[in-house]
Length: 116
Image (tube, rainbow, N blue to C red; front, side, top):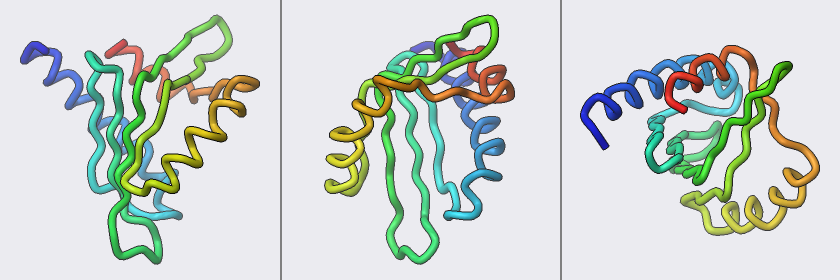
């Protein structure tokens, strides 16, 4: 990946991290957030309320699908630092997401559109 692309990913990662903090604050704090647009992956590390160890989350094969009225987000799979959670997400999320794609807010879609 070029130096320019890495820099762009870093800037977009920081912008999205700041935006997502308001949604995650109730559950915990973001420790790290990185987007790799070349690999279509998102890495998120959080410390959740009441937990003593951080939780790492890798979202692999993400895709944003813009349309006239909305933007949806899909992904191939998720890996976490908790084996049971990885299994649960990958066993149950595909069935749920096959019926419904995750709608992305216009703010996030605007930020993401700069790297897709």
